[in-house]
Image (cartoon, rainbow, N blue to C red; front, side):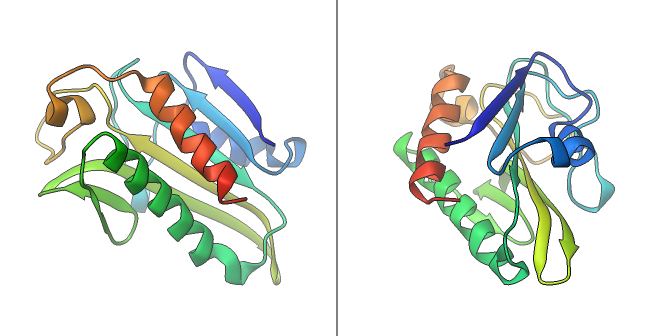
Length: 169
């Protein structure tokens, strides 16, 4: 069971969850067609063209601190598995990215707030390059670049969510 909030545009899916986490239940997902201020690791911006990529964040609550790595690896496994279903062979590169060859296809941002041994929240932001084909100076790629065709973003999203539900986050 999960709660889904979808938006045409937000500042940041992760920021929205972070600001209002107390109001949302465990396994709340925010998905947007565009983020005005998407964020990545180390304060970097995540630039994505509107309606071209999968931009989402997942709120998990009341987990133990020692579960962070296990949850992170479940999500990485799900993302790699879904890409593999499309015939795309991605690999994980620390700290939170998926690559195909030398090009980044997916980035994650994991933020937590702890209350001693229990997390108040764990927010996992995911930016998966689906249909965008230009990336400026960045060594990046997308599902569409690799497969030479447009991909249905909602199908990719549904496959990810179904696999995450099976992993019982």
